[in-house]
Amino acid sequence: MQISNRHPSEAASPIAIVTGGSRGIGASLVERLHRDGWGVLFTHAQSPEEADALERTFADGGPVVRGLRCDVAERDAPARIFAAAEALGDPVALVNNAGITGGLGPLAELGDDELERVIAVNLAGPARLCREAARRWQGRSLRSSIVNVSSVAARTGSPNEYVVYAAAKAGLEALTRGLAKELAGANILVNAVSPGTTDTTIHARSGEPDRARRVAANIPLGRPGQPAEIANAIAWLLSAETSYVTGSVIEVTGGL
Image (cartoon, rainbow, N blue to C red):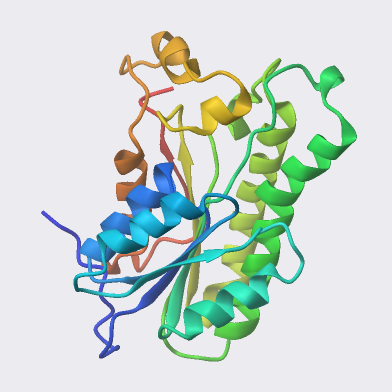
């Protein structure tokens, strides 16, 4: 059964912000949210062709879907992103999905520039976006939601692969739990989804395209996850069915 994500108090389609929405989990989430009646403002850092193709997919009708080229690590990104979303309607959801692992390898081989970039994209950028949402959404009665996309690496630590990425995601989960308590009185729900190994292009960008299949033997279900399976969990957290869920980290890991 399809979950309806439409907020009954709004006449027009609610707007969701999805960072890193041009491919992988983000693109699957954009498709799912559009199907459920959301308008979407999604960001991408350097994939204009994929972003244009995703926009064209929804050009024939239904809620609006627009892409914005924006690096979430930039300090002015939150203001730019929210301004673009507000031009489409009333944003009531933020999904911090954009992420990078950096190159695979032990910490001793990680350079300073890459270390700082991994933290900036995976933790500092989402923290600024959460802060922007808190500043804009507090003081109104309408329910709003933030979902941070973490990783099973926050629990496993990913030794000899990407421990800084894992540490940043662990920080994102701590941010989720703390911010949920801060914003509960403002009717802003804050949760996270922690995917296990998922079959996306993030592995190729880290230097090992076949990594998802390589680690599948360690997953109890015997396969990597699919982007749509992660998107379904995020969509559920944005639905009306989760009105009493905040401060939670939902694992979608195939049993890992």
